[in-house]
Length: 244
Length: 231
Image 1 (tube, rainbow over the protein chains, first blue to last red):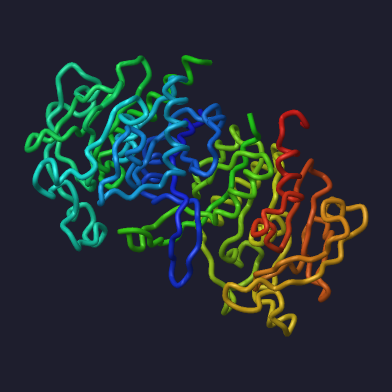
Image 2 (cartoon, rainbow over the protein chains, first blue to last red):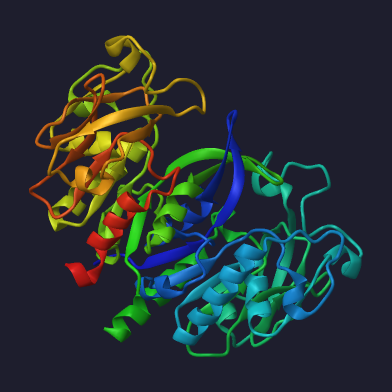
């Protein structure tokens, strides 16, 4: 049987490789490998196109990590530490609202989870250290987040609410990596179902509607724990079969 | 719904923001913009050699530029100047062959054109300066060689280009034998610059880089061929 086709929202970014520089549509391969390892086929959806018709070709979508979301979307002034990419914001907010309306299975990772809140009327803490008083949700200042793999991320537990989809997926607690300086303040239409027990930062959200819509604040694609990607792939197959 | 055009991609260690040398799937933004401006919806296809099933959801395939093809694919030993990505070769050939089986419209650019030729049984020159004695097809790092091509009257590429024969090249390999493809354009030194396969609905390869100028003639032709209305 054909694998579910999973769209991954991607960067349009000036990148360097070797001594070269170019403007590229791009995404780290960790996301691609996570989709392929859990039975899907990944395609990258670039942000330069505001139309949403591509959703008709997809069985599921991952809103991936990236830069900060423009606080203008929830009517707040910009914090000095906030760095935005408004082109990507516009494209992804439109895609997410259309995907929610269509009931397309979706996974939000880090920025993608925060987008779930903003797209449905919620808001973010623009700089988490201001709120919780510590920096443990991202790698130590000056640390290359890649130099030693996941160990360089902040690492902490997540406690999951019972009788939720997330609980069926992850159980009562799990340990996650962490690399973010913003966090959800108001989850909008999404329901918070998992928290960092140290500071009550929202770590998991899910949508109350019938379609699979899960957001996680950490980076499962950079770990061996791909339960969230597996759940997305399974929901994508299930919904396609149901629609057929 | 606009036609969906899949663009094959590089995997390269990319550096941006706080990230250093992170293996990433990427294509130059020029390609996605060229497809968008021509009325298509671009999606980027990371290499995957498992199965070409993604073609079920695509209306057209764009084989983008990239590293050299493995010479073993056309029966030669590895030359001194040849730099390859075998994983990408495997994945792209799988996609291309399946796309040709389905008669999906295919546009090949630079490496993509060379791949069309190799898939059709053709061969490549592994380093053109050794063969031609000049570097006009790649004058220097980041510099496109402007050349004038001659197109075969009545060919698809002649119809698309019209009286304009200026092309911008950046490659150090080129087509030696085009296999079952028809060579429909050549540079003044005789090197094949355009190939077509008249036995398919739309199979066109160009050795130059039309995406840099977002050339609507070529990308528009791909998008029109990929439109459900014109099938």
